[in-house]
Image 1 (cartoon, rainbow, N blue to C red):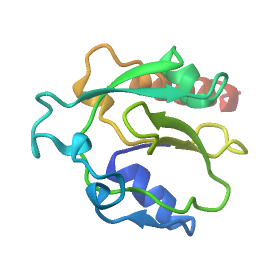
Image 2 (cartoon, helix red, strand yellow):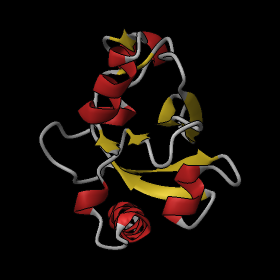
Image 3 (cartoon, rainbow, N blue to C red):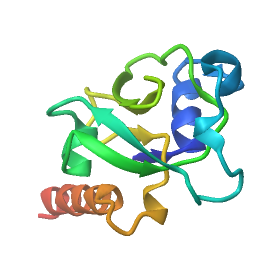
Image 4 (cartoon, helix red, strand yellow):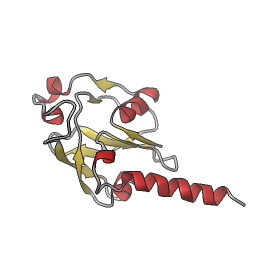
Amino acid sequence: MLGICRGMQVMNVALGGTLLQHVPDKVGHSEHRRNPGSFDDSDHDVRLTPGSLAARAAGEEIHGTKSHHHQAIAELGEGLEVTGWSAIDELPEAIEAPERRFVLGVQWHPEVDETSRLIAALVDEARAYRSSRVR
């Protein structure tokens, strides 16, 4: 499973976590939502835990992202771990369930970044899982 932006937030809430309802109230700036509805000027780096699913899927530990959001993870849901933080202000930007095969949530939008490897990593994992099940 790959949860993107609100999908990551839904994953967290579904597992009992909570959301920070308005990021600027917490961090004092709106760098995560510079141009609502657009990815123009929406780039920032995310620091990923070495060896984490997020880092393996991204292919790097400092990952450039495109995002715009005004909500973020507050309390983490059960069974989840934060494995990525915004370089701007340390807000959680990647979560995963380390006890599961491929459960990853990212606050950014890999689908609008032609260089992102995240969606390909999900497809590769699904293909590998299918191959392991076909007999």
